[in-house]
Amino acid sequence: MTMIKVENLAVSYGHGHNALKVLRDVSFEVAKGETFGLVGESGCGKSTVLGALAGRIKNWSGSIVIDGEGADPKRTKSQLAKQQMVFQDPFGSIHPRHTIGRTLLEPLEIQGMDRRHERIEEVLRDVGLSHNFRYRFPHQLSGGQRQRVAIARALILKPRILLLDEPTSALDVSIQAEILNLLKDLRERENLTYVLVSHDMAVIAHLCDRIAVMHDGIFVEVTTRSSLFRGDVAHPYTRNLLDGSRGYVATKPPREVAVG
Amino acid sequence: MLDNQNILSIENMSVQFPALSGSVKAVRNVSFRVGREKVGIIGESGSGKSTTGRAIMQLQPPGAVVTADKMQFEDIDLLGASEQQMRNIRGSRISMILQDPKYSLNPVMTVGEQIAETVILHERVSRREARARTVAMLERVNIRNPERVYALYPHEVSGGMGQRIMISMMLISSPSLIIADEPTSALDVTVRQQVLSILDDLVTERNIGLIFISHDLNLVRSFCDRVIIMYAGRIVETIDAENLEHATHPYTRGLLNALPSLEHPRDRLEVLKRDPLWLET
Image (tube, rainbow over all chains, first blue to last red; front, side, top):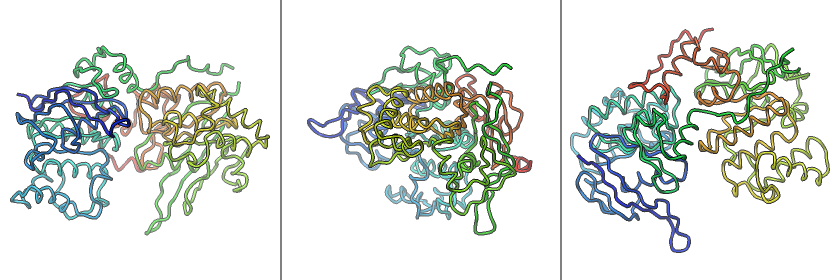
């Protein structure tokens, strides 16, 4: 079953002569329970795709169908609750002067949901935090714990889709592993659909079933996890990204080690 | 050959920061040597890797106390050096490349003037000669139109070009040691490759030492000759880069296994279990 269907999505910023086409023409489908990856370098438009899906960016053209329902640039509250975002930097995306409980309460108030206390406790347990965390402030939490809170805030509205914008790139390797494992568990338990944006090929390949490689506002290639692992990619740009993620490739032979 | 000669040797260095109750040791008794090679320092945030780099330059924030048995850089004892001596060393004999060129370049000076300033300051050459050397240096870091770039302000250049400008600024006075603190973390993958290969060429060509501080295991493994792994202010392991795969310390092993990999896909990533024993030596 198709969860997200995007056809001829285009976004430009600015007007008339100064208009900048960030997304030229993007079409894709994401099945229910699937994880779709968007990979590319800064400025290629990958976060703009998420913004348009989430309803944050309104001046797009084309068509977006979410869960069988056509999405207009202006959406109803219940349409907005269907997909939730997790941002890159947990240090910037959580209100520094609100307790975690208050941060989690806000989406419930906006959506007018009931059983607020129970829901907060449930969602904290789901992301592996004890319920005492609701009384804490963000500065009392580590980076990994904050990202768990950001995921909890996205999950509390029981969305069908999580839009993940570089969810682990501000975290250390060991914390990244914890968050990636958590995302995998949640996907299975809650039967969620993910769209994951990252610049890290290894992270993308770890979590995603299908991967779109973006460059300059279009998809240059849509490939699968297994072809990435095999290194079986068609477009030279994808190859470039793959090689880059493996580390540094010396262009010249290494320097001679001293003999005598 | 000079290859086996140490440029820098550090013995038993600690850095302490004053805290509300007593003091916090950010770096604990580290010892290492750097020769004419590329040495990587890997660690997670808070492991003390940047503090180590700054302590070598004597650039620790006010209040921090650096203690060591020995800090020898070529013929200079860094521990006993006065601020005046250090000022002559910084930028001319040891230089430092930082993460984001956007913040490390002066926004109100053209990039050319900034590079020329380094030469004028350390070598007392004429403006005309400084300009000529700057243009030559910009050309050396593969900037195609150096005369044009000379007159640009930092906001007019891209991230990759900014980092190449930083490299040219750091290398123009022919230092014998470069400390690069996450020099490519703010750059895109394809640009990163370019910047690293320029850095690699220059370090090799001039036969100097490089300390490469990074959190990126794959990058350090492929770029450096030797790797120092830091955890909680200590050096837990020093290993040749090509043997990193066979590291023995449980922390290094844990890091390697926590990394999603394109070569060895696995369903779940291993979560690092921190052993309090690692905090002791």
